[in-house]
Length: 411
Image 1 (tube, rainbow, N blue to C red):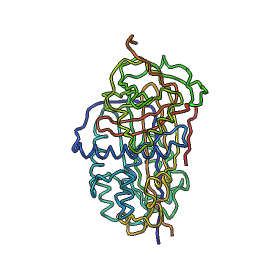
Image 2 (image 1 turned 30 degrees about the vertical axis):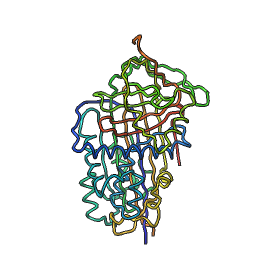
Image 3 (image 1 turned 135 degrees about the vertical axis):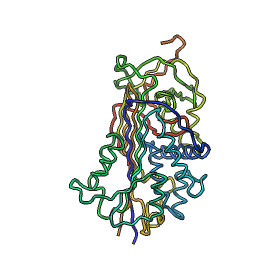
Image 4 (image 1 turned 180 degrees about the vertical axis):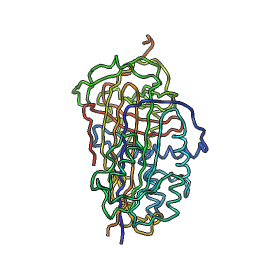
């Protein structure tokens, strides 16, 4: 008999409310850099598979990577190797990446420059036995708390899990699992959540927010709300040919929101083609920016995306994990495989700042003002990144081509 599972991922991003400061010391900077580089490459790989058919998009590579890493912990033989390749963890040996993930999560969360919360949970079918070693290691390295799936819950077994996710994401993610997602043959659900809340270092004055024109890539125009201010920002003109980058910091400067803006209204597609090359280093966008006074005009926007990632992950090399030849014998004596990967994401950017939330899970089933200032007008399609600059970790990636299109569904 063989079993299978669903890996479901959800991400939400909204406006920020508060912020503080202190940079936590890194216990192993070299190893953490290796892991954040892996997340960056994985993010780029995912973007290549998702962006082709997407008008707007938002996702959290960090949350997806963390949830998959918990499953990877129990993968063996060819399944382990395929996930290692997809997650870009080939530079690590044995359990090394999981120990570094522990350090990384602690470093991101144990500081008060902004509010960042990461949580991991494991829901079990009462009849399903997880290997003690796996349960102990996920508890120690991912701080994953085990709970039983409540099949007798009057509103369905998804409701208690959704309540946990909503609590961990400060109600940014309230419908993690749809009704009837969990069935009696569901054996195990692994969930990761991410919540980010940061205020701009220089918040925008809402009194200056006004309607203006956003030009779409096809040349048509729509009216949308733009925030405006003159402030000192880090900018990099022609970071890539035809692409200008601006860094908009949150308080205390560790975290920042980056915008990559093509000079041409229709230039985002050309930039994406560069991004899709295996040799492209995404971190090149975030280095060597020069501070100058900028007349910044950028749209307020909110997006919600529901993305099925199974096809993308298969294309990226881990197809074996989704079929009967999968080997997750490090999780259980029962045969398991992943049946689906889904992410739901929302992002809202406004005058105060940014709040980001993410929830990711794995379900396994049994089958059986200045004269010298420059203008930076974000009035046509662009890419954006939410990044921890101290450890070079990308938390959220997205693109906005049409501010009027707020709901996105990708299969």
